[in-house]
Image 1 (cartoon, helix red, strand yellow):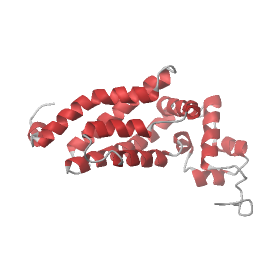
Image 2: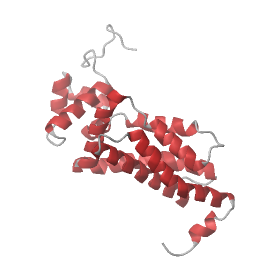
Image 3: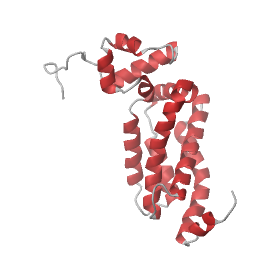
Length: 216
């Protein structure tokens, strides 16, 4: 831990990755993402551009916040489900648990999601982040099914899971009266019906035959 006698040059007391992200989000919400420059954020925090880039590689990354932490929490929640829990139930439990936030964190999360889904400049960057999220799901599914993460079934489940999560988040963003955890739980229960059938087919050894049949 860096104390008052070990403060790094150019980094005033109180500056942190979280402080940079919060300040950037507030400015993006107030001024607009494109209208806010890195210099504006640095000036608001009283630090240099170089200091900001110690925390985030780009302005786009500031809008996402600590996404590595999000991925790590998802992995922990998946690992905590245990091998005896059915695949569809494990995914629902892990995704729901990894998206529990304190009430005071929700306004910031809503701003972040509005930016990510509504700002064209962020959408290309979002593609990279979504791919990282899907990779975590695909690796988990592949380990459960005994196949490679790049195989059809893990990739199909990962893409379906991302779409399910995005649907739950977007409804929550547009409807402040809705509950994010309840949205995710309900959406994953709908997805779970299909995944339960997949698990049964895998146990019966018929998955390869089914996905090899011609047609859409």
